Image (cartoon, rainbow, N blue to C red; front, side, top):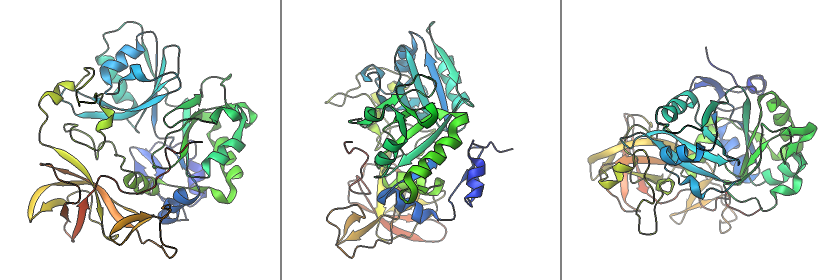
Length: 401
């Protein structure tokens, strides 16, 4: 039987097209459709139920040491109130899962992991724990998570904050305020609902990930819709997938997974100095002594045509060199004079009305230069795309608030 988030009835009431996602019944899209949902995040804001994710809470004086050993991120550089994106690798350097680690303070840390991965990651950490003073608790059932993303999200959150409204002034990217588990949290929504409010997201646009007690999920969802009115649109997994692809963000166990984590667009999760040398050892770090010839690149096409993600080959001069791991359509971009332009681009023509461009990730057996033309081929068609360093231009995730 599929698991259901606290907002399952909401999804059905909004006409959600429900599907099995990691053992959870989740909406692919609502009656608005995935295209409109995608564009709403770029132009105004979108709200997502992310209650299927899992959360591990680590407490104790040895929690930082365990995380330093098991995460690629140098957690010693994360101050209280900061969070960091990281990989969790096994001894072979393959990805167990990706995570965001939060330094809550007083030897208190949070790991957000993917749907169905709470017990897996907890076991992985426990089996590699050589410390005494650390506890690892799976918080499933105690929390819920809602993401509010897009340029209108800042004004909406200001309306929602009953306590600590000024605390988000100057809140930097990958920093957070509050604690969902603390009734005396420094920030709270109406009726005293404690929240952890994080300047992070999976869309590439300015916004927040909001964690709250599970019993308050419906209240918070309704607060967001009431405060946002026409500026906020409920969004499903399809828009989340196309937005994250255009923002060059990976899907765990699809773009990263049971193969070596080397030569990827997400190598910033590795602790390197300016010369490219690792600044610490961690589980799986021996892989980087002699990394294999495996490379992941973003690509962008010339029209919205796409191929199947599974089973599609990457061809260079007619020869197969790898596979397609993600293939999606970013509906907010098009080409103007050959240049990828977005609906948020300040230099877009007045008549700009994009049909969208295919984009995604390939995993190949050799290095490729940006701009290299390749073909993607599945059982139905072959399309030409180019290797790129980035996809959707003028994203807003890092803007100051």
